[in-house]
Length: 344
Image: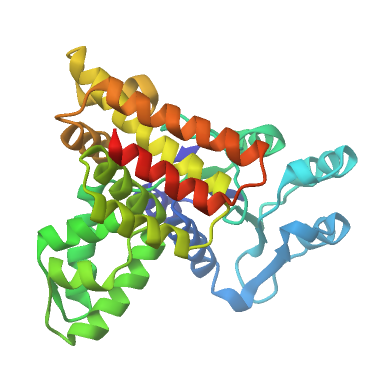
């Protein structure tokens, strides 16, 4: 069976323990918490055999699987980040043979947080690819697969308010929403920021102003701020965002790709509005997993034309070609491109 949220997983564990579990998804913190739930149910980490999935000894695994537990109800084996695409064909065959012979007393737990199981695919309908898909499909039929994707801003806002309250502090709901957006709905990042903010206010109130001053926006959020500033000709805001992005020392091809994606979001929103299409239409047509991304693009592209955004995209494309074909400084080319976009 396949499960898509932590609540359903908890309910499943209460009813019946499966012999096979496979956890993956974009929400790394949720994946880690799901693994912790199973390991805790097994009696804690002292009763668990942990194997490195990146250097998996299949002969050792075959032996461990058949062992009978002496001081616990189950023989639990936890395998982290086993990428089947990196295994040879004979190794993959042996792994599936081992899975077919897992006895009732053994619980085998796989999780993925250290590599892209989607092979670069995006959107709400993305699925594991390659040999990892075969493993997930096998466990769907013979155990439990849990896919944990990032939550919506609305869901995270409620969770943030509850977590802050649990730590003895308070947070305004608009501030919680801002925190979710600043962190681009990344639960792990949100958890770290909550700890920092609660330590700062010391049982006080976390406001939107505090978040703006203390929480650094995620890469995607900063790029979106740059895109918005460019299209609205806010030169100071745009150059401030440029400084923040260049300070991250990212590979320029990656930064250009993220900027292109942000511009494309704006272009789609413009085109959809001109064609009398809705936010929901755009989400369905292009597979957006988060409604707030499309709603934000609709709102901030309100006075823009598709032609204006298209011109910016052409400049971006031309600049990328210059980066690949010449010896000019990539940083200089990037800054020149932003200035040209602001002049359009």
